[in-house]
Image (cartoon, rainbow over all chains, first blue to last red; front, side, top):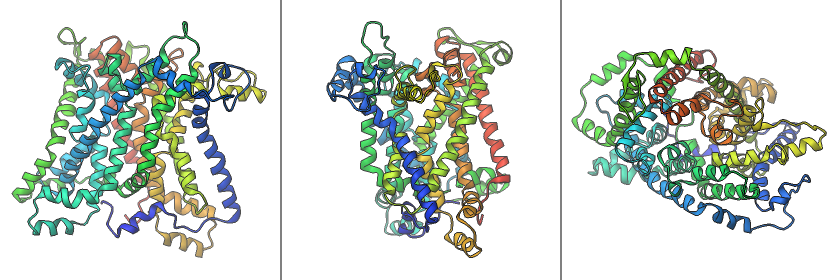
Length: 299
Length: 316
């Protein structure tokens, strides 16, 4: 059922290539497709940065400027003057700081229960949990909104982060459960014979081995929270509480009547908002790819 | 994959037998102890609200006054007396029906290319992966600029190529959904889904390729007769998740066009949102949500049924 465990190195192999390549012609074609495709995929990112460093007059002229005449680094400062973008970014970081530990802790606990204990009703709970992935969020949205409204939790971060502290979502639990199942039980049993409690087994034996999967979960949760638009949009209605994703829409939506065009500033804001995710990915990418590959997302 | 096998080959009697078998007490105690946080969330944030929303769907409710029971009137209304209901369904189906298969196949072919022994592989992978890191709202702002009617680089380029009347993209009723699909493909093709395909490719036993080589198969025939059939479980998995997600698309359409122009991107989730939070028709919105859930679950179950015809489990 789950990924079977051979040796760690055999499972790490996915990231490296093992197959003999195609013919010469095929290889050249592959390079051409990948290079052209790669340039097309990268272009919008290049264009964000380039546009963010131009003046609006340059952007709104009918001759194309691929690069700014003089890089306008001041555009980045102007974003922070135009809207409370620093505050919005800080709010996003705060939400991440609340949610990521919650997901890591509670999804690990749940995954541990499903992977290692044989309790009454386990399979039923497990299937129900997977079933939650199928049900659209809109089904629970309205009663949840009313619940948080009645509890006077509108304009707090509770509705946005409580899920992370209550299991962190079926996908994360499933990912960690698959990973735990690929760790041989002998390791747990050896620890139990040495007198370890189930908590100690999780803490001392499993969690250290789960580092790639936990990093994956942390990155995915970071990205979920950073990306999340809908929940903060409906649960928050004070501008200074907004995370960057919602703030960005406000910035985009300010009517142009009394201000000069601000495409350059919007591009700068988009770049600012994307930077933390890219930095995180660069730092953690080795673990991230291993985690996805190892966590039985291997199908 | 485990999830799909457990649900598709589900033997009720075996499960019941297993559940009723006696087990050690500490297995129960610790099992439930570790399960508790999720269980609270499941009951409090999922089952509770889910059941409540069934009830609300049978009422007229504006949050301020108490819900008023009206039977199935909300369900009747959506089919007979809501001019935006069917259009929102067709638009959602168009978006997901075109965008998801293109995205899944795109990721598959990209992963096959990136699974070759080529130079600078990590650089290529990073190049394709980067767009998936861009937050959706930032991506919308960026694409609205790229596709800006007058000053966007795409239209400027098209004009330079002699197309003097390029599409208005997000501002054009016919092009608004294709614009969203394009943006979705840019973000999705090289992302996590592609990595899942890479993992699937690595799981294909080497012997099969060796055997094919001995039989004199060309690279092309290996692709069609070995690689793609063995990737069908991965395609299936990604299609299921993709369709569930694609049908629920909200943020991109809401931020890019707010359902416009002229309701061209008025997706179902947007319709539901407007009913709930602009008009405070909470009862009606709950009915819409349950209808939506039934559609999504039926589609998923139908795909699972259909899967036995085309998904090939090697050695399983």
